[in-house]
Image 1: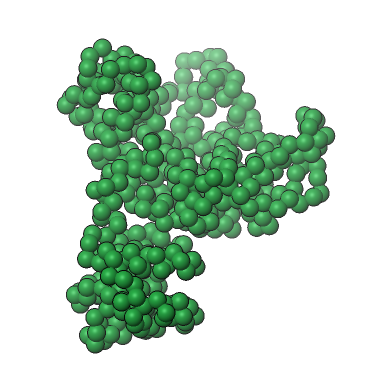
Image 2: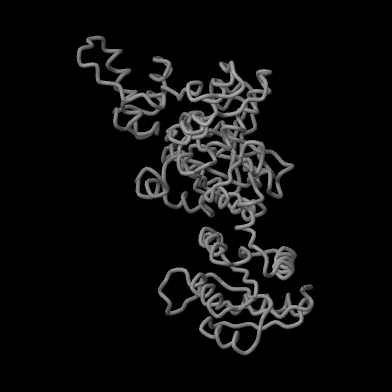
Length: 452
């Protein structure tokens, strides 16, 4: 069906939205009906059949569910309307909007929208009415979003769909997940599917930057600004101008660093160290951390105003142990990669190898699987990898070291204590340094000293 022949019902309690949609759609469709009160939806559906319903996710109504859009979507389905439903949502409700796809919505649009994009979405919904929704279809047709970012599990399909929806926007995105889950791959996929794809993608491991290097690395410096500043240097934010900057391990930066970062994000300007001249920047910000959002928000060491600034949209990457058969999909992918790299014949997995992979918890996630498969391919002597060929990382499996009660060497005691505290805090340097009673800089020096 063509949009010109469609009858559309729009439900939103914001009169400005209704006016804007009416003006946009009136010349584009056969009939448009707008409604401010969602309680009137059953009456509208009783009076006439609509081809498409544009439904807001949030209403100031008496329905105390916290997700009125989902409630009314279910009501529309219960009333057996054959209309395709497209949800209207804000950035902060994208997780809820993705849930609406599982409840039967065809798609969703994010406010504020581009008119051309909205019209294209509505035309697609009208054309595909009655067919499978994009979310459910994607599980059958989409294995991933790149050569390494692959997966067929439900959690990964949700992430792929979210990337598809948020990538073309300039929304700041916070990527959460355990170490080794592929947060950087998610960031790269967002950039590659964005309108900035042909511009720079700049990654910075901000958790590894010392206080003295933080400003220089991110914002640049003038020649002579400090002892080692032998020449003028552009910072990473300037290098990412018109493109994307990815700040990894954002949860580990200090309050002082947070204040400097917040100022740059608010003003959209950087000032190089040693200069008084502000430089305008246009960047899309992506951040990642292995600290949960709840821990980040509840800990006095991280500013809430910065959390809001970096967390317009949140993507939580599931650990490998929660991705079902993806472990086998990824294992076969890495077998092919390393068989080609090391000039080995094409290999497969025996039934026992598959069972071993499925039964392992992978505390090191995809990174641990990748290294295990690389070792197995290098050592392989048969045409298939067996369970005995797959050895998991002793680093991940090793228990916390004892405190060496019989040791008298102070360096041995110090090294053991540092390892134990780091493992206790899952490698979060700030927390480990705090418990040890030293600065993060001092902790980094000791890590170098003991080659940890």
